[in-house]
Image (cartoon, rainbow, N blue to C red):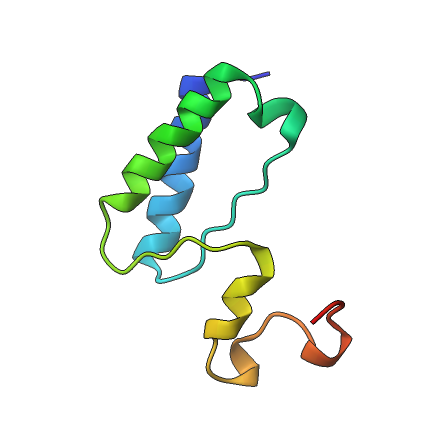
Length: 84
């Protein structure tokens, strides 16, 4: 397992690159890993980093699909998406 500081830097780098490209940043978190105190601290650091940027929005997984404007922007077939 990587040091939390290394994980935080990787998360920041990934966010920054996607932000520059005007793309969505998605972070999957597994409770058995993110639930460790040092990882929670790293997550807090990531949230603080992201909040310093303009035009950002925090949302749960599939809620971001509501903000796409055309079918071409969607990464999946809406008809086959479960539980909508």
